[in-house]
Length: 357
Image 1: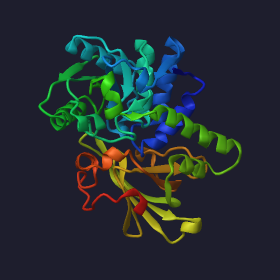
Image 2: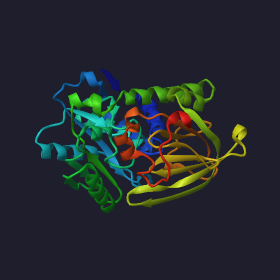
Image 3: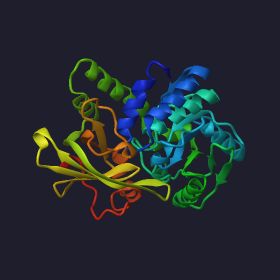
Image 4: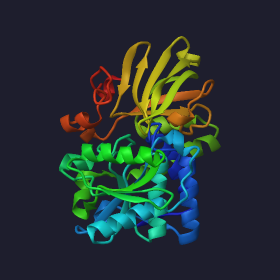
């Protein structure tokens, strides 16, 4: 058993921001909420799958909405616990453990804050191994776990229970609620037993986030290349280093959708990379050729610092390095690609196996 404390929170936030593939919400905002919760309630116990009893009630919690809205509508704190309590009341039993639904940005920090406030252990793993924009895009769905009942809560005290006929239907209903409540709410959903974690979650992703964040921090302190440090930790490939020259972004249907164009510098001078995103980066096209696709990870880092750059933070003139890294292999199955492959998002390309990137 390990603990998440104020000492390792920064590294986890930085690493989770990178793993979030541009989405999951601003990790800085989430870090502030988690820091305050730890200060008030103490460290969070972090447990591996084999430490969770088979009959445990594990509840993933997260924020839902457009990350662009999060920049202006910062959570009040406590919304995840409100969603958790509403779900516990509905299912008639208390949660024994909290889990992140995704390892990405604010959605890796909010479960830490929730676990601290609720006094519950946090599972070291998540349901994606990255971040995805829609509620049904989780690995537990591939083993038959429903994402409902789902409890939604906002910062004004409203809570709603969604019971849907399918995971896709739950996403549509929850997204409509999210838009109606201002495009920023909290959710507790996808309840799992302890004996389902190994098949349904990606293990040790919070530990990975901490190691990744620490590698970037230590590289900066040693005046070496922090982007290279992240690349090595992720076993990834470099797609392009350059300057952001164009960003088209809109908040639509509860998502931040758009594209960005990056012109290469240094060894990449003369090359151009285009990114397509829906909260998260989903497609990378270099010089007209597809070089990386969802569900693999497409990560944008600040070239100088190695810090993650979210889709809502992309702006003209920013110097960035774009990396690709392999997803959990379950995502490349037929069912995984049906949930989160490029064609689901409307791109007229097939999944490009990572090593061909």
